[in-house]
Length: 181
Ligand SMILES: Cc1cn([C@H]2C[C@H](O)[C@@H](COP(=O)(O)OP(=O)(O)O[C@H]3O[C@H](C)C(=O)[C@H](O)[C@H]3O)O2)c(=O)[nH]c1=O
Image (cartoon, rainbow, N blue to C red; front, side, top):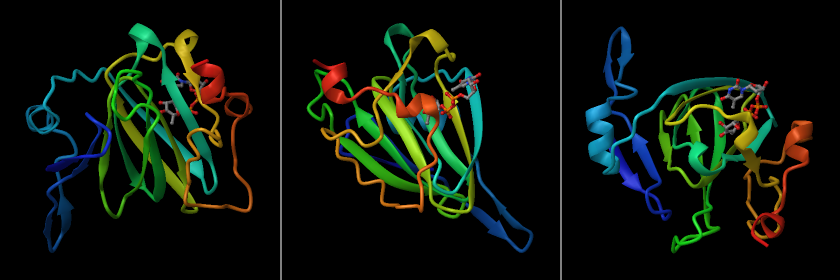
């Protein structure tokens, strides 16, 4: 596994070492000792999630507040998405900056999104299976988020489906200006 820190401090793009042979391939998708050595911190994941979505589905931008904040290690095991992480740490040099990366079952890339970030993705293939680890449990009451087309963030989702498929909940998310007024 190799890792490269993105422009957002503490947010890493990871690439596994793939072992191919005439049967197919094998790779370690997660190894605690190696992962922590690459990202430079102890991370105790407690929950694994999986989401299946159709083309054009946009989930996010989400985060959990306060002590329920979650760090996430995200990857795609079928199809492809444009994955977005936004730095919401007021003291960070990259506060309100974001990255957008393609994660896919082909490139097998993973993104480590630290606590204090908002996260979301849009599906760019017919379907996608999104798998991720969280270092804190789901806490519905602490859920919050930023609307996907927030003017301050001005995210280029790099994909313009005939229509975005967005949950009613996500259509009602706040803007950055509302969240940080
Ligand atoms: C996140 C979550 C949801 N749920 C239940 C709550 C709802 O009944 C149902 C769907 O939840 P939601 O519409 O919030 O799922 P997503 O829109 O995929 O939310 C996720 O999408 C973005 C991209 C994220 O980074 C977060 O992990 C998470 O917010 O699953 C659970 O039971 N446990 C959970 O951890």
